[in-house]
Length: 614
Image (cartoon, rainbow, N blue to C red; front, side, top):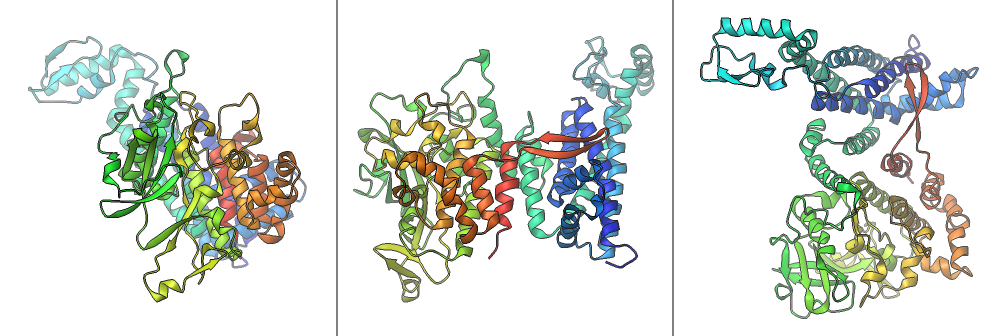
């Protein structure tokens, strides 16, 4: 940057203006009434976008540093790191870029303040009755149409629409008799609402501009965090969520899942029910999803294995089985139908890190229910990550790519409140390339009978093992692996190695998100060391010693194999040592905001792994 401006001066200017904006946003979220929910949510969404933009840059941390009054904070290491981020993420070495950013922040503060003032000027009609209904107010503006019925909100009776003069007189009478509250409401409908929407458009434009100033990787982090925040906004319908993030068709699908999951938590009379998560929006057994065993290639669906490769209508498919005991009510298992519909009717399977699904198959003869997945074209035999550990280690960059993709899938599941419950390396599968040509044959090598990849191709892992997955709500039936493994090849020891220690206690608690994160941490450990947990367990005298080493000595080895950032992310998952506080600015000074675990996971695992390069 030119000497006249300087990165240091630009950084302090940015902190000053951003602090004012963040304080105003905090005041808005704390004190704004709930009336006009859609407009209020849209304004809050814009505040969230700006807050996450600041968070990616580390603005809040520097504000906290300045608020603490530490002598010489302007020259502190934290401030130097902040200036480095401004250079790399916002191109603050360019004087024009710095000036444009700070000017945009100033405009943001001014316009947001105006928008908040307009919203606060409206009385809270949702919570009080001023003697006139909102519909009555709106119809007072229908003039000159004798075919339109005018419903007077205060009298509640129907009459013919008056002439324009008569209507104007009635409007004046209504305002005079009902007082300033109604006047403010009518003024909002006539004038302020249009102004407010215009201000919202201006704020949205500034947010978009601030986003374009960021480097692409930082922009992606902001987008993920904004999506997480908005998906967790209470009582917001999917269509409204989609409006908050235009141009993102995937958001509405994710919002629909999140809304359905949340609706399961709203139990009547405080009772627990074992209901299907999708029953509120679809039948328990959607007929367009149900497939018959006879439709599959004869003899391909063997009994016993957890997964089977078959053919369905000329397509290669993989069937993942849920086994159940005789006499078990199938309604408890039909949540798989809801998941199948989700993976069939939307493209969310990409975000969940799995395969698309044409439906599910029931096999009452063998007491099992199967989720059917389509195998990608030009792919051969199914392998698992566990199989891959028996081959020579893949290059570090390929292992990082695998870890990043899995972390992103985990975060998406967390954002919509869905528990997987079976995160293990044997449930992460990939497919060998088809050996239909000499060129393709050259990309495959065999080590100790286990297929693996060569030639620089990274195995594309797909998350499977959905047989225990469910929404994270108390009304959902919580199944255990012992309930489902009749006839399966899984061993108790294998399952328990990936299980959180709390789930192995005699009084087993209900499964929660932290347990999925623990299992994911073990997979990160395996990928980093290129050793399976079975191999690591064999080097220990007991399960307790293995668990202690997993989060201790074994994890510390990752510093040398994968780097400090990868090591730190893995340790957080294994030991649940997440910092769920975020420093914020407020009018009265600094305060700490507690953030959700999905957002924390994005900040301290997903985004951190994205920083890993080799």
